Image (cartoon, rainbow over all chains, first blue to last red; front, side):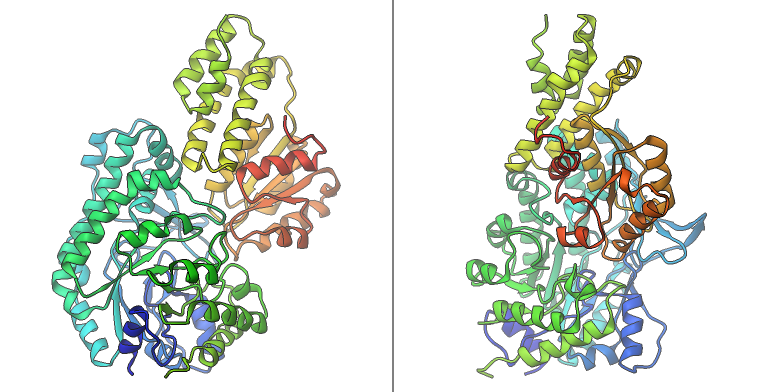
Length: 386
Length: 215
């Protein structure tokens, strides 16, 4: 069984020979460049000039020598966007600043800032009008240069027996609306000025469709998974009410997902939504989401065994392998192994599970803990039937 | 006389325009500004907090109510200062050095202000020395420290140590919050309290000062 067969078997809710795994195939299952370099040093791999798949989050694209050693089954395609294309690190006082193709200004603190954070949103004015939204300089998401070389790359991965997944070029509809409008303004608009809020949400949907309508006709034949995202959960609850989600987001997601399925009928749909999204899972399933990520097991309502019991027949879990908020950065290697054991035992039976950390491995994660995690997956990830 | 129950309703419903109108009418009718705040506006935000805890309100609704409250308070603040009305307590708040997140911190600040606290917001990426200086300068009873990243959480302990070194630790209660923060972490670094949400923050702030649960 090669990697691609392993992944597809698991996504079909059947048990492959062992649990398939991911590291670095998306911008939400990746590894910070500092953790990546210290991991390479720790296991004695030669130094490399790391390639970045996301400069804003400072995520390294793991090299083949490392992911081969870890037996990672999937490879990611990273179309060009504001996180990996024309990113300029301009020194401004005590920070680096970068204004992207959306007009969003990001800031990373010197000397050791670990990420860029948004400090200015282009449409944050109190008196924003529908005309301002219409006439803003929006990026051309349908520009085919964004996927230059990806078909060849995907073909090569497939020839090696790997599964291939592709992400989009903008964050989720709600998340991207928050970035261009400012989080507080965007959320307040949704409660108090729905017409304005919807104009921005519609713009995000339009820009997503423009990308997928350009990319998928060219790539659908060589990819296995399409990933989309939008964060609706918080640590304890949801950012917006399930009712508001159903009124303002769900209809737009339906248009988006239906179109993706039409353009790539054989690809599985992966959807990333952080935090406690339990009340929304029936909606995701109804919308045709095949795979939930990140399975934020530390958030309220996201206990892995309960999720598996209640939704495991209808949705596959990609993530939830180890907690990244406490155990992975601060735990001992033994605590990491115990956490992996608990999560794999809950999520793996019957297939429908791809192992990855809950979220990106951050700069402060000791390499010993990453090794402990992979040893645990190797030991526990085998299926008896294989 | 205007029925001031309408002021409470306007805040709960997040109607900033109506709040400003009603506050102005009440002032014209010589209602004391401190009465407007304590009898109508703070109870309105208490109701907003209760709806948030019952999951009838989420962040958007809470934000809109808090903005309506602030629109009214903006008219009242100069008058309250003139009349030397004392706030419940003074809170200095900010996000730690190296961390640029502010949405959660801002919500906590708004809810504290809605509960009658005076809030001094230092913003994001605040070095420990600036927290210490602000606590001293404003004679704050509470310091609220936020961190959204596992990599910046250790800064919270740095702030607490800096307070101790400046001899201020016994004079101020330190509350911490942010997605990766837990009760256990808060206790481990010697903080006085932790709130898992903006409404919990208000509850904890009142409790560490020995105030009864509701205003």
